[in-house]
Image (cartoon, rainbow, N blue to C red; front, side, top):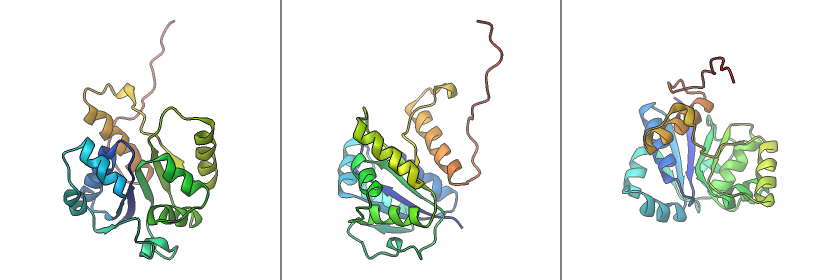
Length: 190
């Protein structure tokens, strides 16, 4: 059984965290979920989903204040961590080792243990400080994956876009998932 750590921060795009939870549940993963207070506020604004539903999808639930949780230690073995959505504030904390809450600490431990850390950073436009933070994270081993739609899949709904991004995250985590992959272009005479 795959153990996945999933954190949801207060950025727009709560649907990505929800959908990841739903898909991980279908895949039979053991999910350790951390939800920030701002995420709960954004969840209420963007969706009809409540915290109880989110908790029901996870095997273990934590708040960022649970700094003594097992996720805060490198001895807790897991198969990867995803922060979806990820605020630039959270990304910055991780990049500069400010592990003052469980989300940042679990991410810091994930990096130091050389496990996969995938950040669905939700911020636009990005200024130079944001870009240098994301570059620093990439150099530390994080996978920076803003949820940018792939229009080659010819999405018809927002759900199509979300499903494709979530499938790509699952693929990066090593799950066998079927989704529309880029298949190349036929020769085009220009």
